[in-house]
Image (cartoon, rainbow, N blue to C red; front, side, top):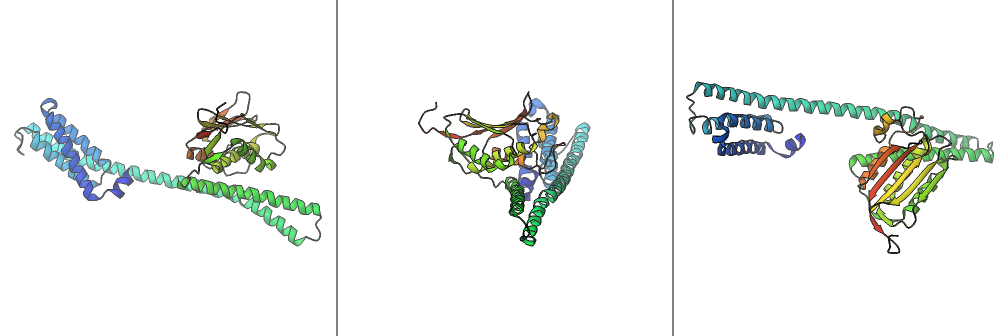
Length: 359
């Protein structure tokens, strides 16, 4: 609000606003002055000056303080409609009001300036913290696959005649895996940049959620490492009008997160359904679940669980939340009573039943 007033309201308009507010409060108070008394009017005018000091520059605030004192004297302190004050007590009250109004306006303005500086300092510290976190993550997450690719290609170039077909296949497989890992990290960074800049604009179109789930499952099938993935989609689901690309990235990140952190014996299940004109998408696993004291932080940028294995930038789940909210949806996380975690996504959508029925 402070930025809005100072950048978009000129100083002349601030003068006008300060005078207008004092005039409005004085006019309303004048109508009820016989009921509330002139001393209460002084309090109302003082509150108005404090309010203006929260938003306006110092000079308009001082003008408001002086104008309020003059207005109180002329229109409210007996005898009215004169600047003369016959009562010593009223004269003392007027002088004290004038001093307090000026000091109150100045101090309120100074406090606001101090709060603004403290906020800017906090923002700089948070930015530096995020920068250091990102730099530390990238130093490993980007350099590791790059080093793998460079090492494998060097071996292919330098020892092409000595390598067997099996060796070449293994090196090419390493290059492929490192490239996919590198592409995933760069993609997460780009997606987070889009979210931060407000560039995300969903492109809605009709699609079959069953097809989407199986497409994503096929894309990351090499990451399952033998862990079972169950897909349970309700029959006769309608077509949904949502952003296919955003939703596929949401599911991709959730499945990758599950496959990366659950134990070998765990099972991942994807469920999809329709609930009151909403797409219901559930990803659950039979792993260890999330620590209760960290569940409210899993969607924060760059946050990684304390006991998580090395690797990752902590962006995957924050991107999931950002993409879901970009489509006006909600996502929540819970631990299941018998172990494991469940992510539940609900996104409002237009529906289209191919056969015209909702059975």
